[in-house]
Image (cartoon, rainbow, N blue to C red; front, side, top):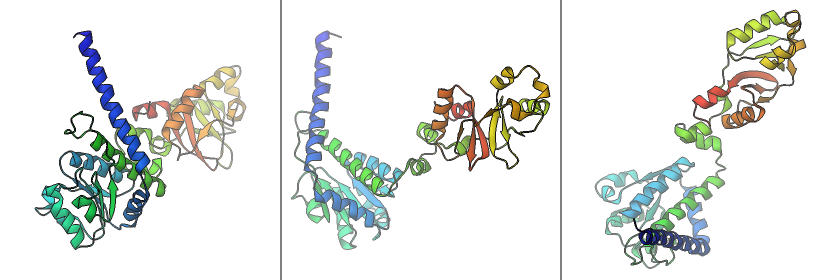
Length: 319
């Protein structure tokens, strides 16, 4: 490839990205009270957000619906052509419709728009022309600002679809923050994959069959527990069951002289580092790596609930 060709490609890429970025900046500056009204309308709905759009707007709509659903706002994408052939039955009075169309005049949306008007279903329209059919019929009109498409000739949806996608993300995050949606809620909808692993809790991965001995346990018996459980450590508990210490390989080496004549309380490291079962496993992994240890006891109200090994985190895909 010639150097000149590569330079041309890079210039094109930068022009496209900057053109779309400028469109996003104009979109952000132009937001007004209609955006807040759209959020309120969705919050008031007892059902789902029905997202619809045709062509490129449809592809964007599917992503918006997926983002809404995964962040605490029940949502479903309904294809406008399928809606005209029976899927309008999916759109109920309890729902709110979010309809996307750059021109606002997409013919395939006509039946869906009419359905919302007939049954009093709240309609949020997103389009670039304030006087379009979609926005004139909508209860809340979100107008995409005039911004050049990145293709240079105005015919390929680029900037317009990027703005629509960003507007959908803005709605989803505004709704998410209002609902005080937490990482734990997010994990409920993302149990699999890397994201699910990162949001796993200590309690999800820990082992409840723990190596534990009492403070007055002879070290001959404590060594047996360490060997049998296979974690290389044992926790030490007092008469009430509270975790008061831990015996590790390092403790054994430090007390090698006369080790078998000692009791657990004489060998243990008191006040061991622990973690709550509700904490994210990723936080536990960070602590273990930072302290160069391989295990953490999960403790609630001073009582050991389980033990987490660094290999449990790695097996779960947390790294």
